[in-house]
Length: 424
Image 1: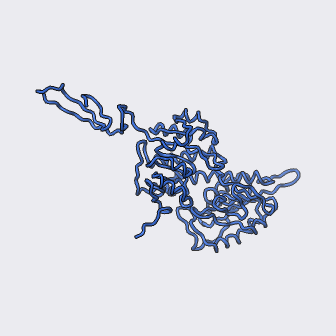
Image 2: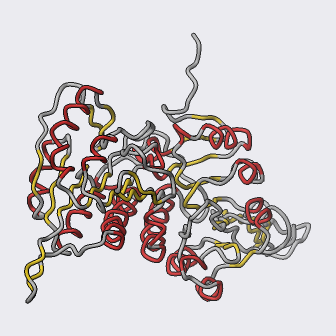
C-alpha cells in the first residue's frame, strides 16, 4: 500500500509523515471511512440500493407501483431506480417521464428482477417471477398472504424477504402507508359512478314542466372507507342514501355525511380488530338480512363493500332480495373477488338476474389508474423509507410496522398468518 493511497476494500487511508528512510522513524496514520465501497476495483463510488418497478401483469390491472414524481424523490435520497419499459403506460405515465425523473429503463423483466435489491409492485409477482429474484432481495407489494400460499412458498424457496402492504397495522404513524384506505376511497367513489352510469334514471330530484322526478334511493352495505366515500359521492349526486353496518360506532359518521343509518343490534359473535370486522356468526347475518331486506326492496341502487381479511366475503344480499328489487335496479358487488356479498354476482362480469343488473368489477381502483397509482406510490415509498435507507434495510424485528407487515424473512415464513407451528 503506497503513501497517500485509499484502500477501497477496507476503507483505510494510509499517510506517512516523512519519506521512508532507515534512520528516521515513520508516523503512520490510518483514517477509517464509514462509507461503503464496492468490493472490487479502484472506483470509490458508493453502492446504491437498486429499486425495481416491474410492469403489472394481473388481469385488468392498470396501476403502477411508482410514479415519476416518486422516482425523483427516491433518486434524490440516493436510491437507484430501474423501471420496466411500459410499466406506467396504463396509468398514463410515459417512459420518457420516468427517464426524465432519473430512472433507468429496462426492457428485460427477468434482468430487472434478477438485479433488484428491492422490488416494488402493486400485486404480488407470479411464483416464477419471484424465483428469478436474487437471494436476500426484498419484495414489497399487496400479498394477501393468508389466501395466497403459492406466493409465500415461492418467497421461501427464493430465499427472499417479503413485506405485505395489506398487512401494515392500522396505527396513527402508519396512516401514510395505508394503501388499503387510499385505494378503497377511490373504489367507493367509482362504485357510485358505475351504478349511476348503468341505471336508466338520474340520481337527484329534478323538477320540470312535465313534473317532478323523485331522487334515486341508494342502499350501502358497510361504512368503512369505501362505504363512507360511496355515501358522500351518492349524496353529492343528489340521491337518498341509507346505510347498514354491524359496527354501531359508524352511525355518527354515516349521519354526518347525510346518510340514514339502518341499525342492527350487534351480538357477541362480532369480532373487530384494528378497525376491521374479523368474524361474525351466520345467525347475525341472517338477522341483518331480514331487517335490511325491506330497504333493499325499495332501492334503485345497492352497493356492498363488506370484506373479512383472509376469509370469504360474507353473503349479504340473497337471491330473494335480488328478486324483490325493482326491474332495472343496479347492484355493485365490491367484494366479488373474495366470493362476493351478493348471490348471482360474477367475477369481472356485468350480468342481469331477475331484471336487476349486477356489476362484479374486481379491481375498481384500477379504473382510476392515475389517482390510484399516485396514492399507492406515496403509500409504498413511505413504507420503504420506514424500513430502509439507501444503503440497507434496518430489520427492526420488534418494531410494530415491521413485525406486522413482514411475511417472509430470508426465506422463512414469519408472519402469524402463514408461519408453520413448531412441534414441541
